[in-house]
Length: 244
Image (cartoon, rainbow, N blue to C red):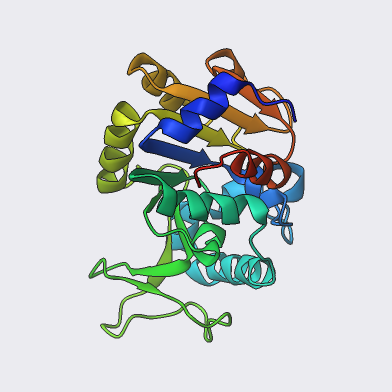
């Protein structure tokens, strides 16, 4: 990869970086998209199951689908792209990871300071008390799972038709306005509000760097677009930083 020195110098000297990741980085580890042509399960599509309406009408069916997904994802390991992003958190004075992925691979790789803006498939939320807990074991047991209070538990993810959690969104937008670099990895640039982050960062004076296997709408905003796999590009970019 022929990195431009201007970009490398910015990565070396900046103190505040925000990383945004999408499904592309997880696809490199083998996580299925669960949408579109790959999203068919039994006779249902993801868009039919990941909704409050589906859960209210048939929570056992929705949980059966999510438990199947969890079993697939549980066999997947973070790739070198996830690992480099985790190292960045320790290197930069100010760092935030904003991920659209619910698979938990960033946390598994060692990332801590992040906003999982669409939730996490390894967490559950009580439909009555709104309490959130992690599921440490891969099998979930009897479906649908119940809270100790007697209410249904639901996956702690954002379903179609639901709003993003306001606390995470506010934290993400504040970080976008204040960062020196916005690094966008493996996201299509079509899902809002995340798709608006590059323009907001650019307007606030940040350098925008995109990593993707193909050009996206973000490429029109980015100062640099690096085409290829994150698992290849991020380690090379990291190794070009002598101060790390």
